[in-house]
Every structure is written in C-alpha cells, then in structure tokens.
Length: 278
Image (cartoon, rainbow, N blue to C red; front, top):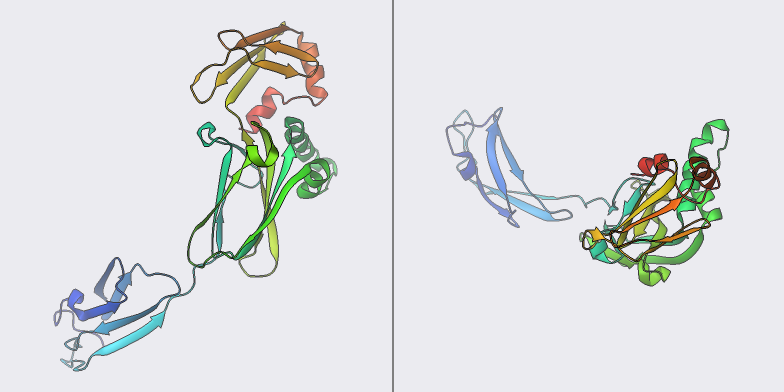
C-alpha cells in the first residue's frame, strides 16, 4: 500500500543504517519511501525501519523491519594525464617524476621507451599520411622505431583503494631531460583481455622557443623553475650550434630555404608541428 505522508516525518521513518553512511536522507515519493545515501562499494548494509511507519489506511508496521543488501564492487579504473597519444610536459618542480593512479586493477604492465623529437614528428607525419593507404598500427610503428628501456608488471594491489605508481624518468632513462613514450597495458572492463594506452612524456627544466625572420634563426631559452632567461645554454639543431646570451637569446644567420631544408630532413619540429602537439 502507499505510505501516508503525514503519518511520520521521512527522516524518522528510518531508525538506522548500519554501517552509517557519511551522508543520507529519506523522503516520500509517489507514496513510497525513498532513501538516498553515499555508500561504500562492496559493503553489506542493513536498514532498519521505524515500526510507526504507516500506510494511507492507517496500518502500521508494528514491528522492526530490517532490510539487508550489498553494494557492488567499484569497477577498475586507471587515471593517466591527457588523452590517448597526447604530449605531456611534466611540471619542472616534479623533477621528472610521473605518477599514474589505479583502483581495483590487480595487475597491469608499464613500459618506458626512449624517444626524440624526430620520433614525435615522425609519428605525426605518418598519421597525416594514413589517408594515402599507410595503415600500420601506431603501437607497432612506435615499437619498431623506439628503444624499450624499462618494463615492469605491477600487481598485488589492495581492493577498493587508489594506488599511486610513481616513475622517476631521469633515474630510469639516465638523463636529466628528454622525451619518452609511456605504454600501459590494462585489463578491459568486461574482463575480455587487455588493451594498451600510451602518452608522450617530456621532462626538462628549460623551455625553448624559436622563430625565423627569413634571415636568421632566433632562439629563446627560459629556466622553467625560475621563469627567468637561461644564459650560457648550448643549443644544437642539426649541424648548427649556438650559446644563449645573458637574455637567454641566441641567433644564427640562416635563410628561410635552409630552415625548410632542415625541417624536411626531420631534424626538428616545425612551427605547425609544435602547435599541433600543443
């Protein structure tokens, strides 16, 4: 029967919920008692109803009604920054430390591959050429081109807790700055096998910008930790080599045609390619 709304305050209709949720409330909706609560996953709860709860005909429970149920487990999840194949510039304050978070994933595999800007640009050019019939898979292409430096199977994670997996890129790859490709193998939500996800990772305490005015190549280097110009930094680009001045600037006489030739040789990304990668 439908409940009598005025017979009992909805908050008094529920005597107790065990274990006690952090937040909960009850209300009458369309003649029924509705209970909303923030519940923990994989937990057995017992709800005790007030015997004074009555229906529209004046009938009451007259006994303590106890309802028991168990919530479902939280599905496995992994949190990685950015989207599939995105380029991630790590915070300089982290000193090359990268973290990923998982919950309810008992085992997963992590790989780090050594990479360069040429590899990043090469993959972009390959992606743009796919419409011409080049259908080789991205991961197959990367594994054929890059060098596997580190691989580990991570497991024995406790259930229902977020687990942080931290990687020190300078320690693993033996370089204070650089670019790496992170590949992670995760189980599918439906339990049918696994899948791979990947990201580009760059760590550095220096930021570099460049432009060409048609007569020279202009370069500006910034100390990302201090936000100040980086003086005395040697910049190499193909066969070009120059050092920054007290303002973090360097210039090299070079024609626009020479710039295009360098870019076509795949030695460094072009302005459009830098913009495309964010």
